[in-house]
Image (cartoon, rainbow, N blue to C red; front, top):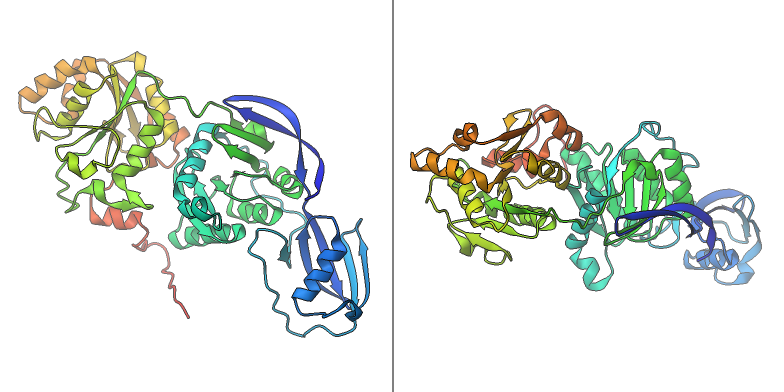
Amino acid sequence: MQVNQAHEIVRVRQGRSERMQRRTVTEYPLLLRVNGNELATLVCSPHQLKFLLVGFFRLQGFIESLNDIESLGICSDFGLADVRLKKDLPKRLQPTLTSGCGTGIVYNLPKQLLSENRLRPRYYDTRALFQLMKELSDLTEHYRSHGGIHSAAIGDRSGMLLLHAEDIGRHNTFDRVAGEALVRGIDLQDTMLVTSGRVSTEMVAKAAKLGVGLIASRTSPTDKAIALCTEAGITLVGYVRGQNMDIFTHPQQLSVRNAGERIIGVTGVILAGGESRRMGSDKSLLPLAGARFIDQVYRRMASLFDEVIIVTNSPDLYKEIPCRKVPDIYYAQGSLAGLHSGLAHARCEKIFVAACDMPFISPVVVREICAHADEGDVVIPYSSNGHEPLHALYSKSCLPAMEEILDAGLKRIMYFFDKVERVDLPASVIRRLDPEEKSFQNINTPEDYFRLRGTLVDTERPQLKLGTS
């Protein structure tokens, strides 16, 4: 495939960035005019175009030999192919679209796309981007096994995965996530979109219409995709592999940090106890996005901490999760007892605790909470609903105060707060990192769970009836 002129990029390697030049593949739209009528635009590479056109006509059944072509002229400067065939084309054409992995056929490819938000700055973090790309990789089992499936995922600015789709065509994966978002009422404004395939202009146009602010791929973008992202205010990232990537457009909107850095001196603790009375079944085992709640929580915690502990009195339920499982020391005395056990068993002096029914842990929010670890014994974030003690940081210095409360037969976590030094993180700080406060969303009832899965229709929205023919 022909390469175009060099583009200035920001190359990130292991958390360090440098500006450099990189050549990209050329995406060439060729308008095809047949017998005086515009037929289609072929999105292709600008080499040996006569071969491409003759092959296209042959495979579409328009010609059987070269004798069926009266004339074939190509103006490369204007991207126009003017062809005269001896036979008239069928009146009702139904061209076969490619699956989006090579030359595609586009009837209304926009020459310009001005995003409504192109002048409004949007900010992202490389750690959140790397986390989202890793989740996409973990989910694409088909792609890894035989290479015949493309995949795409949408995530919010904290790196939380919202939607995922697979298809034989990379363009189709975009359509799938767009359709699911519309059906489920998910706002995609300022989200991140990651894909396994090459990024072309059609894909950028689709992403821009959805309000996506960042597009990233494991492979390369085309030159026209770079130009369109520049115009639309979209940050475009290619060759995202491990902690490495190339930033092609708007690098000022992406904060470059080392995504592989673990949080030192803190153990991640998952509380898997509780009777789940309102749910009626064990919340930790509920399926979500191809895994159980507790698997989702563990995956995020394992990406942040060198040590992760699950506090549970039923360790066999989680035997396949590769971490220590520890029981309550104060048996069946609620979440305070689970918190106490996690602190007592942790190898580190501090722990970050999360409940098993909080599957939307944001690495950015967790890092912000842990950044205040040296300021007190407890670091408690606040949401619009108040303090969030089951998404917080605790020090082993809290153990005596906890044991005093537990020995008195009390179970509420907040009862020991006045005995230790506490740091409160206001909701305004958290909302800057997690505007929708998804980090603190927990699932207590079947209604909560079904609403999360998108199976309940919001009574404030008109019902959408889906059918098959």
